Length: 399
Ligand SMILES: [Zn+2]
Figure 1: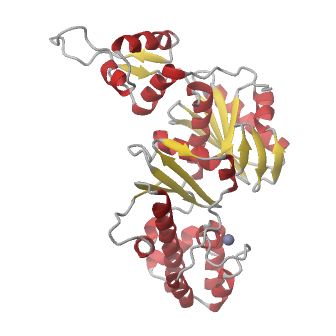
Figure 2 (figure 1 turned 90 degrees about the horizontal axis):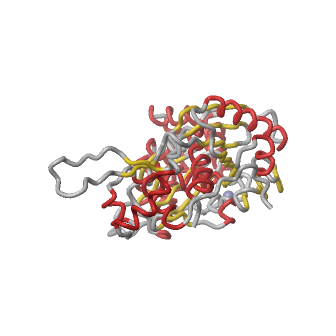
């Protein structure tokens, strides 16, 4: 049983398809919309009438010339002034919260440090963020979305969240009790993939992969416009994907012996897996061991750009590994585009030459490169994914 205090009923059938099309693709003429959804003009009029009466969609002023023959076509549009959502992304240390429109445009963004990772402390912070953003909202928020790195069932229950050290936390229920707003919980990568598909760098293609590198490794796949997933995706299954090659070993040989020891000792027992080559902590550890002083990721990139040979070797080694990862993704799942996100995604641009070498060395020479697009590395923008799953589940509904 759900304890949702005011669970709105999501749309179904053709109503869902109409609203989704207008939300994702923007205002459309009735003719275009009827064609896209394979509906007759009469059916579209009948189906859209209650949605207009409810204020979910509205009619826009006609753009047709008065001289046009017959009844002027009145374009339909999603009513963006009607809805607001609150999206919250939890990390080990912070809660990022955004007030958004239904298409995940951010109106206000807040960040709070977590006093601890204890669920009650996190709920307290979340409730305060929801209260503050609700007070700032032009209309009462429709729902709250929360995302985190972990395994979530039924968009409500966190079974495991390693970074937060959580096991079996009924997060949606607890937040609903604290905020009186319907709440949706999701794995952060799954939600981020969805917002990338609907309103981000995935727009314009039906088949793309999202690869993120930061505190951890994330992977999402879209085929035919749908997120490919199952609950086990919450275990971050590409974290230890093997990326070792002769070229990686050659790069490692350029580095100090302390770093070589470090590469074999990244905590998981793998040499050159995705975690050891591409995560922020490991990159900074490798830089510190090699250069003999604490080095942040941004400092590492700056040193490499300035021509420091050891920093360059670290960045190129990881860049080559990233290209090898792209080759594996492209060979295995055949996406047209790879969207690269996460706090360390700038590696893809700073080490571009090494990335392309790693890609080409593991692809058929006749194969076309996937289009590679970089996201903004700001983690706070992942709040958009949390808002999108709240919108998807409580307004549009899922098939
Ligand atoms: Zn590993």
